[in-house]
Length: 242
Length: 123
Image (cartoon, rainbow over all chains, first blue to last red; front, side, top):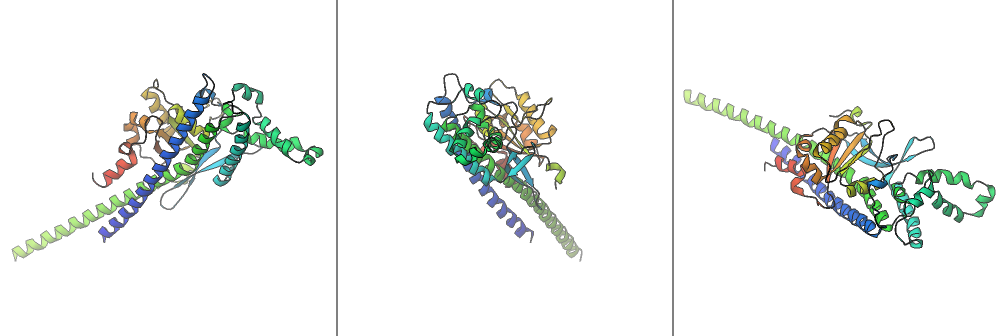
């Protein structure tokens, strides 16, 4: 009986291990692509310019956060996109929506990239941008909107919250117009953090739980075997005495 | 079994890695600096000059002192420097995950999860 339980647990464990190794391979692939894209961005950058810690924003706020979902056996991890609303409170959105918005911004950015292929934008661009990051980009978008909205005079009101959302994008630390490889690196990083990492850590937790159950079952089996051996010894001694 | 209080506020990912790894992960939007006067960062950029004690201190801060970290990502080659700490770390929250870096690809031999697997199967 115990043997069957242990076999069943080990089978479950091997399935988890298989999933873990395939996720690992996927993460390795994404990470390799990310490093390659970062290297390409650095190679094409202006002399002396490097996309690194010198350009990090010291006031950065996480736009992707961990959510731990309680479960009967072991907790499950998820990474969700968080948007700051007007009051500064965090509002979570689903990852699918987040990825859609990322690809949308990529599409907009790629069009910009076609216009200015001359490599990364320097700090000058960011300085001109001011505290309401992405304003320049939004102005272009606003210009494409129907004229009717501007006639009503509602344009500034509608573009303001959009600009606020954009300022949370880490790409803006590196300038207003960023090179394509850097945007590709961001897309790969979003996929790794939003999809692979939470699944990997959830499987890790599940594996740890199964390990505990296997050890418990093995201990139980060892105890049962010891008890059976003891009773056999007692029986054989009684036979000898008779 | 862990209680809800253990993980309710654990909403950030932390990173200990080389500059490219940290930059790449921060691009996804996981970087967070707490409000002043503390202004604690949830990442540590490790280079050749970074001492092991600094890495250990950051790991301790992310895993023990701070209660808002849910997942700690650490480059595998950096985890090797504090392997004793990683291997003896058994808490469920935050969970620690080793990731490859640019110059040090993922090595299954050093992966703490796969070491656990080998131990379970008696190797």
